[in-house]
Length: 196
Image (tube, rainbow, N blue to C red; front, side, top):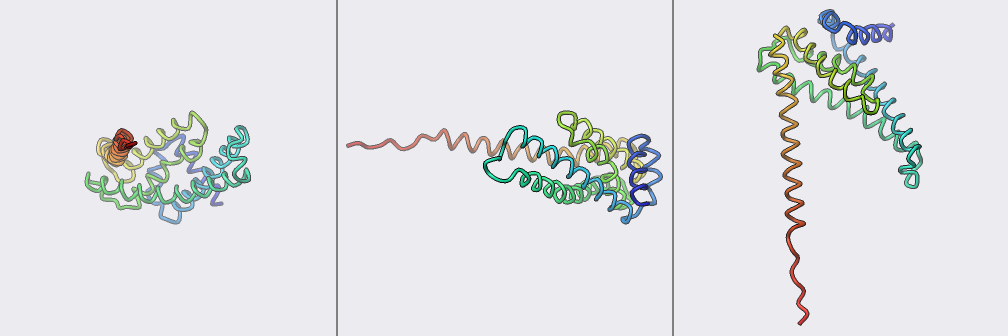
C-alpha cells in the first residue's frame, strides 16, 4: 500500500509536478520520510551497481580488495551521505526561504527538497545524462518551494539560487586558495647545497 502511494507520488512529480505539490501540502513527516528513504535506497543501489560495472570493466581496485567492497562502500556512502546532505540542504534553503517571506514552516521546505529530488534519485545515476535529471530536480524544488511555501516564482527562484550559489562560491574560493598555496609551495626553491 505504501509502495503504491510512493510510486503514485513519484509519477505525479515527474508528469504533473504542480498538481502533485499542491496535493502534498497535507503530507506530514510520516509520508515524506519514507519517500526519501525509498529514493535514497534506489539511488544507492543503482549507483553501487554502476560502480561495480565500472570496476569490473576497467579492473580498477582489483588488486586492492574484493570487487564487491567498493560497491558496498559506495552504497552506504550514497545512502548515509544523501540523507545527511538532504537534511542540511533543507535547513540551509529554509533560511533563505524564510528571509524571503516563506512562513509555512521548515517541513514544507524539506518536502520541496525531498520531493524535488525524484528525478535525480531515480535517474541521476545514469552516466553522462544523469546531470540533466539533477537539473530537473532543481527546477522541481523551485516549483515545490513556490507551491508549498505559497511564494512567488521569483522569490522561490531567488531562495534556491542563493542557497546553491553561496556554497559553490565558497568551494571555488577554497579550491583557488589551496591551488595557489600548492603552487606557491612548489615554486619556493630549496636551499642550495654547499659542497665546500
